[in-house]
Image 1 (cartoon, one colour):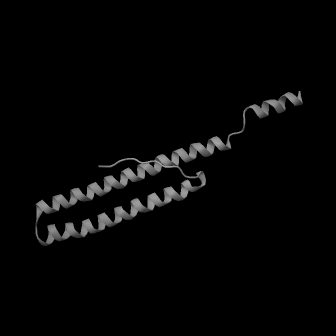
Image 2: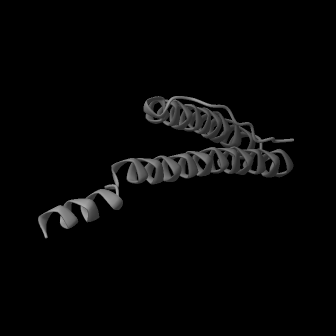
Image 3: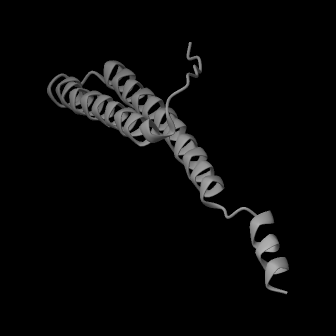
Length: 104
């Protein structure tokens, strides 16, 4: 069973945290696919074992799904970071109005 967790970090730490999550997802995906491919080749080509070959392909698909979910989480975090940065960089709407009033 998969669960979502949340915790608080400094805004400046978010890119590093997301980068670490992407690294973890890609490492696990590469490891799962490489070992899966080798095992699949061994099962099917050397032994002709279709049942175990099918099972191994399904396991590889599960690794892809897991990585996709992790990368989706990363996308959501980056979108939130983008929104936060945009909010922090927005000019204060009241300040330009006050300056205009002084100039008139």
